[in-house]
Length: 259
Picture (tube, rainbow, N blue to C red):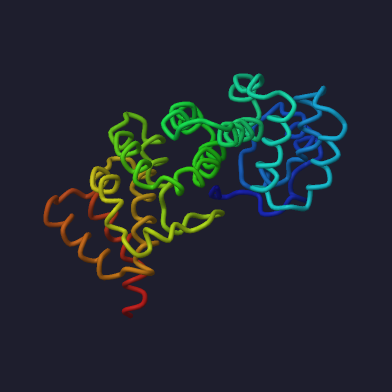
């Protein structure tokens, strides 16, 4: 979720700007701002009737990693409101609150994977970079638990008009996804994900190209020959500049090791 030229330290954020973020009045513009948000203060502002016990639990978790705090926020919201607040959270001005909506959807019990994906689509296509990351991070455990079904369902998303949706597909299934558990299946048998990768081999959007390249770069750390052969096949099948860019970036670890 990094941004070019972002502030490197929380201390670079002005008190006025931090107060605005903690009140949920604005979106974070860089990762540092995302990490600086006081979840307990924001929760009290957005959901003033959530209860003191929930707020105390949120305060106590202030030093935990952000993904744990996102999951805790969702658990507290579900315990107090069920899905009653889902629409409100999904459309909130704060990207952090919309991130909570992602985790609420992921935590709701007794939903099929198809239903979760359908409900998550709006958040996966969110205009904010952070919300888009939370959308796939929150669903990743469900996707990992049903990989075959996930690949089947997400392969249809590779043709979506939105580059954000197409990128979600690839990023959600990365073998070594950032800030989440690795998918061991794709470390040993990456070819299982070809129904998702092949349709994206010449995607026109750099946003998607980078994700595909990162997927293959992940895989190259365990299956370098497979990645090299796949890139050779893609380059035979198409002469597009998009495919050439993807393959160049996908092979960066292999080329580095070979130097």
